[in-house]
Image (tube, rainbow, N blue to C red; front, top):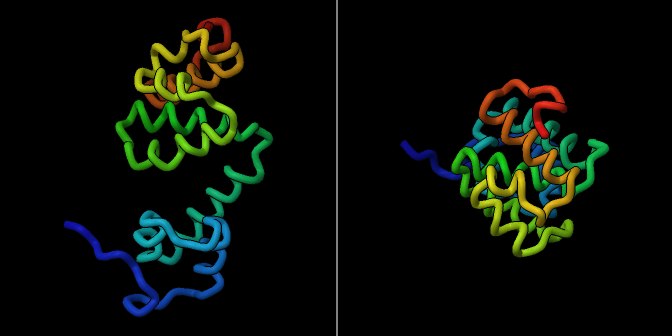
Length: 140
């Protein structure tokens, strides 16, 4: 079953919420936003969550986007990868680094990434596959 894209005419929502989502997205809603807006509480929670991840974490944009792209590759979330790979490149990743992410296990040991970046890749792999993160010594 597919839902139609949300519009204000189909299901009126708090205009401040919609404006807040549009502001976070640079002035336009993505398809994801249009689906989430079918549930105002869900859209409000998701918007706050994404705002915190994007603007409040003490993590560089490159490391943040690298982790997101690894999880997208591991889970087959092509939509997410499609939207975050350009962000990763804008944050400083090379085309070669993006290409090796097709296989996150290879990327985790690739010399194309520095030690910290490889640690982020291993962390993303472990948290996605195992949920539980091993100790630092066993992740090396």
